[in-house]
Amino acid sequence: MAWKRWRIEDVIHYPGSQEVEEYVYTPGLHGLEAAKAFKEGRILGMKCGDGVYVPPKTYCPDGREGELVEVKGPWRVVTYTIVYEDFYGNKLEEPQVLALIKPDDADHGGLIHIVKVDPERIHLGMEVKPHWKPPEKREGKITDIEYFEPA
Image 1: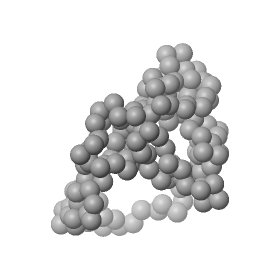
Image 2: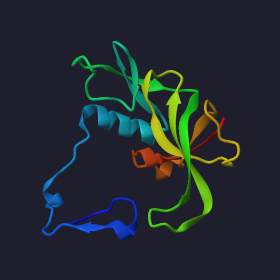
Image 3: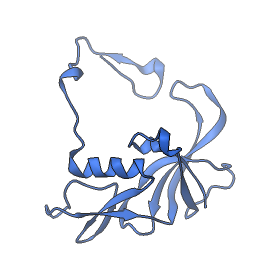
């Protein structure tokens, strides 16, 4: 098994194998509902006593079960970074903007995603909206949102 820190030159090798085939990840009921919502072009959050969490949690911080709610935004850039190189140090053809994006109708969390915008125009608080894949290409994953774009 190899573990990569930052650059391909920093790969550390650990002898042996990891039996990942034996582990099955199940999203749970809330994760399943969130996946269905992605396929429908909707984003869900979890309403708990102290607010709405995005993405939805399985349980609220106080241990109670919350209620799934649709979050509609508007969405705003909370923080961002501009990426000029890929994981291997190769220069990208165009820089990419990665941002933490939070909807106004949620209190906690947010989504980390690509924002398709000129890096010179990105700013904190910028209002953005999701750009969805066509319905027939959606799989019930966060990648069903191709990117966010200025609203």
